Image: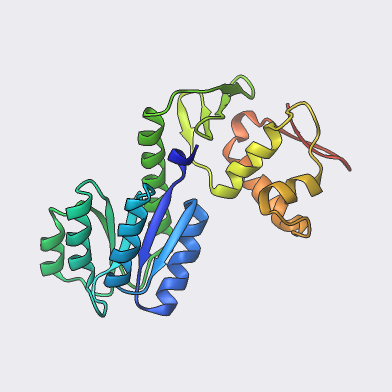
Length: 234
């Protein structure tokens, strides 16, 4: 299952931008590593690559101290010429864009960031990464949830017939929680412990995640609420 974990390296020297990007990346990808400049980013990348835990995406600023983003990208490409990058910069610099053409740069975000567009791109990147990873995995078990939906317990991917449903980390954990001992009702406390590892998580937070999933499967909803007891798949 480790091969299906999605990993991102964020390299950003501005603290505010770094915190914002980390927050949004963490809602999409499984693991997010942080570096404050290109030199630190390269060191983190080398170690992860040597440990066979390479990053699926490197998201980096351009102008940074010690080593700029493009120099870091060039060095990383020498290690892994298939590495994918997204550039974030406060500058619409044609020279930088031209230099990045042959460096597997798949997108370019300009500060101030447009969150909606950025999130759409990140979700598309994750979906593509998972689809590519799953091609190399042997299907272990496909669990049919109803006439429309199946959940692959090997890849942790939800499908509406052949269409992949894009889920966040928490949404995926909700499905995993509900299919564990699938015939049993899952209490609120069980779901909170499973998804957040914290039974003190608020009911509102839990309901928000459940609603997001139910909105995505509204054409043939399989999550049933049992008043006073919890939730079950039917």
